[in-house]
Image (cartoon, rainbow, N blue to C red):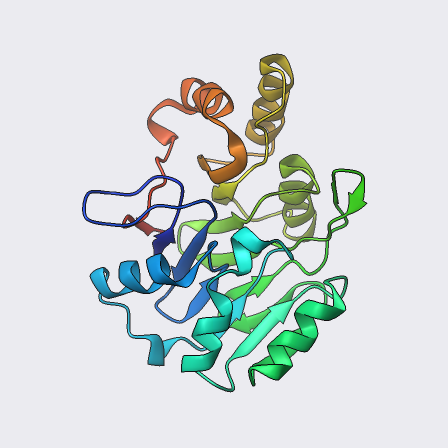
Length: 236
């Protein structure tokens, strides 16, 4: 199974970059939509994405840099399913309905397609306010891949949530935003150790992780460190 990186802070040559994150799993489940639609659709075109094949959109959390491309997509694909946490704002939910999306408030480990599920709402915090978030969980022959938006509940907590749910399954890789920009390197090292202790084989921290934190992960994971950038296609 493949994951196409549609939107990220860094982009391959010929692709657009921007603040936020988005990836397309198995050509049919879109996870997050970056900060604005122009780059999303331009990058999709360059990756030969057929938007008519997209079956659903999963939004990790209710922040502009993960929902910015959603509204234009829903205008083009009316009736598209949008999986969101119950704790998202009323304004977000109302807007999905206004542009004729199908709003689905997720339950824990709700399947969105074969071998693709959401964790459901995990409680998080951002600048002193509640920030519920969910991750995408994909099962393949390699093991489990966990895809995160910003990890406001804490990347260790989010990975542990998946590991507790599937204690006998290997977590093949974790990639997305880890939100460690303001963390001390020693704290980041503890997080890296905790993730390795859970048996995670590969990591691809990006977006809000922060360059310094990414370097700590890269040093510890070595050849199992994945560089994430718009335009890249990952084998998951």
